Amino acid sequence: MRKELPLLLTFVTALTVVVFRMTQWGWDTKFLQTFSLAFTTTGVAAMFVGAINIFRIHLGHIRRRKEGWIFSVVALACLVFYTLLGWRTTNQGVTYKWIFDAIWTPINSTIFSLLIFYVASAAYRAFRIRTKEATVLLLCGITVMLTRVALGKMIWSEIPNAGNWLLRVPASAAFRAIDLGGYIGMFAVSLRLLLGLERSHLGGLGGSMH
Amino acid sequence: MLFQLAAAAAPKTFWVKGQMVPFIFLMVVLAFVYFFISRAKAGMPVPPIRKINGLEAIDEAVGRATEMGRPVHTTSGLGYVSTPSTFAFWAILAHVAKLCAKYDTRLINTNNDYQVLTVNEEIIKQSYLEAGRPDAFNADDVRYLSGWQFTYTAACLGIFQREKIAANIMIGHFMAEAMLLAEGAHNAGAVQIAGTLSTFQLPWFITACDYTLIGEEIFAAGAYVSREPVLVGSVIGQDMVRILVFVLIFVGTILQNVQAKNVLADFLRR
Image 1 (tube, each protein chain N blue to C red):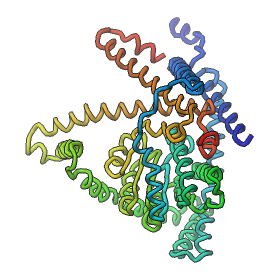
Image 2: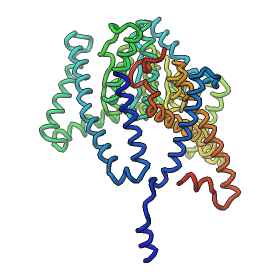
Image 3: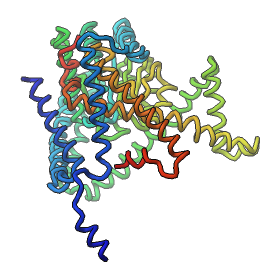
Image 4: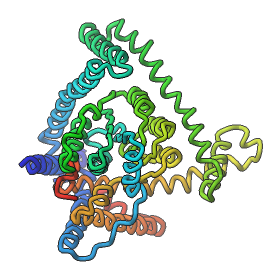
């Protein structure tokens, strides 16, 4: 019953959404709007699960005096303080907004900007010519990079055309093929869910395997 | 004016515009999947699933972590419970969790979404139970880090360095954090298996990871690791649909070039 009930619920819900979404009747009855609202409400309620998980893990660190436990204290203090502040002043409060704009946003941007260094180190590894494929990758990479800067046109006027052709024809064809395969895969997963064949979300590959 | 009145009075069709053909397509896929599942269940020959190196490497990655005495990290990235690639991740997570339970290797699962967290926790717990090691399950290793993309990334990078992970398995929906996570795990000395549907992130994974599952390969994971006839049959059915789509594209391209009005395209828009 522990597995059959979720499977039955999944089947009924999925079938209902398919029928309601594809027919005029579904839109007339406004069922989909109500369904979407119910989905959002459930999602918001589940937020507490995340908060409980954070508290449980960090309180455990503090209790066991695990290395770096002081950072757990800071994390929990920030979480509690910011939640209470938002509760009291709403997200339009001056202090609330200042903390978000002057502390959180720059830190967030800093992490994002680290990306360029990681890209450089990964590109260095990938572009080391060891195989024929790596050589092709290197040549294509250099051509596309030169397409994006004025230096490329100065070296040879046809480089921008070559780079754009690489992006427009071979790269685009490969991307579309991958996307198409992905969409069919998504479709098949949805169908497996509808039919109750996909049971990975119930734990342990559904229990009927291995 | 008369035409406008006639149009307003016209009865509505049963199908929402553009939904009739998808429904027919749904039925065709269903027929293919049902046919191959029936064959597989009856023990009749079905085409085998080709070797997927990324999925073969999972056992090797967990084995490496076991030998080194260091943890395995898994994540589904920024996917939600309703993201199809998250379902692909769950099939792999169940397999990885069973292997970790069997070899007594620590498994760390980090999450960006609290709904995914609850499902992941249940899957890992169930896998440990099925492997006969419920005592080895540690709820503190299934972690919700943050709902913000780069806050989650920064927390992950910290975990990679502090815990010295030996294997990193990333299957699911990834965006700009893909490269940060892949390089961060590489710097921690982890062997990496990654897979996503995003064509923007695939090049980064191919560049930075040891094995990459490209596009729909991630959806074959459940069937591939379990070899369950029902799942194998459904994957083969899905591949047959791909051939059908290829034929439609081919015929559509010819019709587009030889006809003033492409009847196939008109039909598919209905």
